[in-house]
Amino acid sequence: MYAEPRLAALRKRLSDDGIQAVLLTGVSNMRYLTGFDDVFDPMINAACLVTSEFARFYTDHRYSEAAEQAAEGTPWSVRIPAESLYIDACAELHEDGISELGLEASVPYGRFKFISEQFVGGVRVLDHLVEDLRQVKESHELDRVEAAARLTDRAFDHILGFVGPGKSEREIALELEFFMRTNGSDDVAFDPIVASGPNSARPHASVSDRIMGDGEFLKLDFGARIDGYCSDMTRTMVIGKASDRHREIYSAVLAANRAGVAAVRAGVPCKDVDAAARRVLEDLGFAEYFTHGLGHGVGLDIHEMPTLGRRSHDSLRVGSVVTIEPGVYMPGFGGVRIEDLLAVEEAGGRVLSASPRELIEI
Image (cartoon, rainbow, N blue to C red):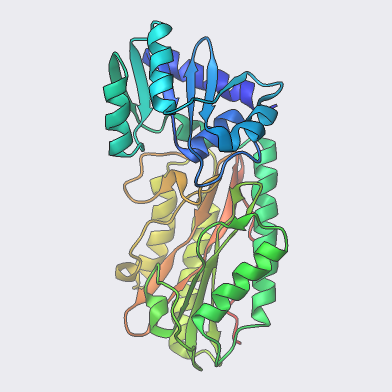
């Protein structure tokens, strides 16, 4: 159902760039291009070979039955090599008279070197060939992202009844993961970030055995995964009663979040969205404590195109899913991040994260 239009779009890109064939090995790119469900896992040994004439999916015997069932009724033919799929794919390309092959820029160097040695012809590195197509989500993809966002909201509501003084970061992270997995998540979208007190001043703190105390920030960054598609949300709260300093920092980040959300609209340069949120923090005297870009695309991967940052060359497109996640991180004291997930539409950004944004005291 999904393979033919995606293949057509890829083939147009190949034709426009004068490329005869492309060999794809990135799992998310292969999953997107084939439309196969229940075939891919992080350990799969596979490749997709596409020309204007054919689409071949190579894998080994562990995945043969699942791949052949998934390929029924699609343009994909399944190949099960006896030994190396890269050797077989390159040999078949030689037999087909293909003299130039494109590879993803993300391919590991060792794999790139091996394929280049096997292929009789020129090899070109292609940057964001499939990733660019993946920016614009089809309706069924958006449905899956929205389902993941709803489950993430449910997990946050659940965890509010679990956190409190005496709980460790690790206990909270495990509870979040357990809730999401037992309520329909294929997997977590990424390892949850649970950062309390001074740890919350680290944008991507590792989960520790630290016991949270009264009067501290607690930052939770987590997401579910439904049918392969991710969600991403961050909320920050205070354990106990918030001080004036807590409220000052939180209010600044919330204002920046709202400015960023308001700036989201199809066609807007991503750096302008970043600037809208960053200006708020500059005006409030917190600019030096916002140390990362405003957001990123979300889909089959938790970080994908486009990038929302000061140096971004991307623009927002209808159908993209992006995060808006300003933060203020004050070493020794703590940090706040408020992150929402949005679907980009012509008139603006539709917020998919429904959890409360107001400061919560536990």
